[in-house]
Length: 207
Figure 1 (cartoon, rainbow, N blue to C red):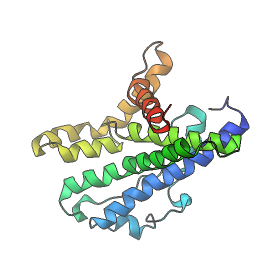
Figure 2: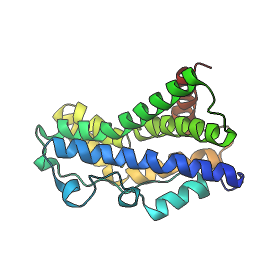
Figure 3: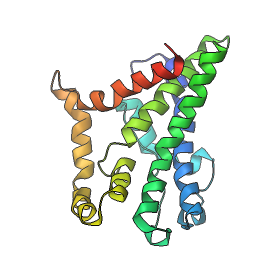
């Protein structure tokens, strides 16, 4: 990311801030709707980016191409239907990114260029980034959303067994991210995130 032009970095930042913000807001809104007011009480039921962006996580996006926002706190005990509702809360973030990508992608597809090369680049970057966040967050490894979605879908016994990877999940995820950096020809993350991202982006844009 650091080898990009200043214009590209600015465009990426413009795309990143709302993508992270709406993702986390969706978690907070759905959790509140399903009975848990933890996020609301902590001021996270808002579209104010400052409430959702993690300083280090945002910086790391531009340094290594991977980062994070502040996780929305959720108390499963307060949710109606327990872990099933937790799965709904978890999937709300990625589905919001999909919705953003869909609106921007179809808008770009049917209205064409907006007349400014920079704004066009921001829109296309937003589509790509939201698609990438969709697929990345659905990886079923903690602390990603896909992990909690899977826990909510599995039978109770299997969910208990799978929950035991929680402690090693972040390390496994980091290893997955870095694997392609050190082993030529091995890019698992590219296969499960980048390739689907590019395919979905082409479908949305009609290219």
